[in-house]
Image (cartoon, rainbow, N blue to C red; front, side, top):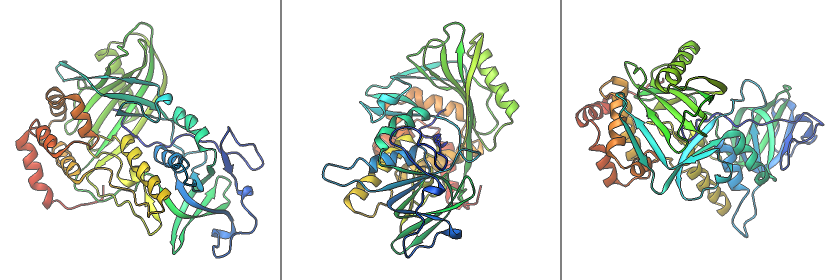
Length: 440
């Protein structure tokens, strides 16, 4: 399943020293662009260059970093925009590939003009092939590709300063923070800012339960019409199920002959390249029966699904956002909508002159329910395919999606909970308080 924010960083380009900026509204700083004499009071690392002080520094140019930059640079009328520098890894092994974000929302959204496609119907297929098709009522399920996201935001980020470098250290200081960075040519650069927001993927935190959501996807084009463009294959459990966890197919059709087709597993470990290829061939040939097709591109990813605690504040002036700030829903991997809520709140706090602590991405009761489900899946007490098939068959689609987004009321959560296997879930809940949190 392509979640709301499988946080692989959006592709960016870094102009070489003396080279042109690539595209309107973008300023890329190379080491030679920095001032020769740093501001007093801050010594750049290793005698390198110091970028002039900014109000805000953002680490990482993915969904969280770019969303926050845009919102910061679009203040309410009468409020001056803060100065913002975005530090993103230069092209190379630390720059993840392009990816797809999917999310749902009601009515027009901020990125509607950038979407690849959107749908008002989802289909879930049980292991026996029984299909449940649900209309989304007031919601739309939306597909956003990272190249379109960055290209569409570029005109809105005309005042953004971009630095192509790797952040090696963030030092919190009494009046702000300093980022020690290293450019692709090895030269050191330092960035000083009042507030720093770090969106880099978090290191593994101690947790009681942990699974990996790992997937491979192919962008395919068939020779004959093979897809229904109006319906998303949200979860197709006609795939071989692992001993613990679950697997399913996922299809985002963009036309009668074009789609993104994915194979996804929730489990303790990833597969080999050969195993992913075999799973996708089986799903496209034997389950979907696509006939002849060509593969136009590929997606891949691994998302930790844990009940680890995410602390949004890393220092007096340093905060975590995106996956690092707990925006990924532990039980599903969706994050894009939570990222938008989080960055909207942070930008509003900066504009008002408040301390911009990112709010929790999800309510405590939803995280508690996720922890119980993860424990049930990890132990095998809760069989994944029947669990999700039953939920989507018995719960209205709009309520189910709002639950996955963490926006349901307590009474709705109870109604959803009653549609789950109660005894296995209770057994999982009873054991959680006695489990130690350990690194995974």
